Image 1 (cartoon, rainbow, N blue to C red):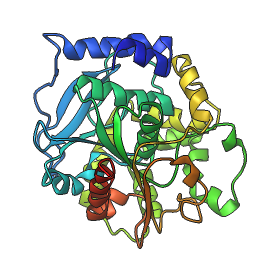
Image 2: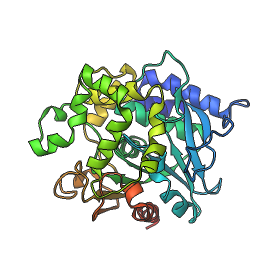
Image 3: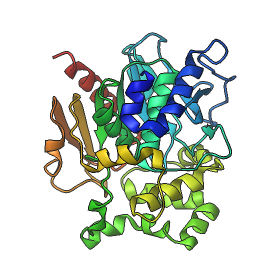
Image 4: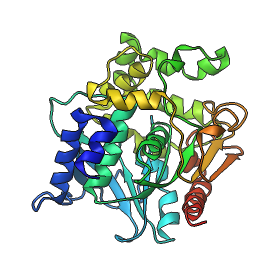
Length: 345
């Protein structure tokens, strides 16, 4: 994406960072600035991880499939990592897709290029990271799939940069945040599921996340996916991603920002204003809900169906919780294939 298009999307303050990323990606010495591979965590079937400079980050990511195949970008959430998509990836590469699975800011081997950069977890910042990564990898368009933070990010890209999103697979409903709308309480049973968000708004909660980051994440996994009997080895493989030094600041920033208890970055003010309007998503979309996901809006997609104005399919997966791609990798991979087919009908 050129400088003017990016500036129109996120405002003048972000334009410089994006342009620097794009220039670096296309420069002679920095083009595809992939560092020597970092070993994936033990037990992972991903090959050596790659690193690339993208925007204000050095992004760690897994890549599989043919180099010139159609691209699928897969985005994880909290408290998860790239291994949510590990089982689905070979199902997609078998169909000729090039699958790219990055660690989000604050996770795994993704690091900030400058120690002075604001450790900001707001939704706009994470979405701009995704665009910067596509720029750095010279990917014009991708089918994008995600859940939790990743689902929100995928939805923002689809809504604000539809020319970069060929099709969308999103889990858990329409996730783009309007902070003013979040001022209204939900029924107590629903609020109960978000206990950790309020915990993180306290100094005690921030200390708790630092000291018990693994135990806390495992508890969330169990609560969010009550029928998923994951092994300790499966969890421990992902938990290594939480040892990133920016993990706690990014998580705390994200949850405090959405409740208007922490500042965002002024560079994203205009983008956040557009997101607060609840923009429609026009690209072909397959929506997936886990039947047992405590965060899924009640009533299927009735509360947000009008947000999807293009070709659209919605399914609820029986017996599945929040981490849809890891709990039901075949169903998730099928959704990606279906979303891509919808672009050709």
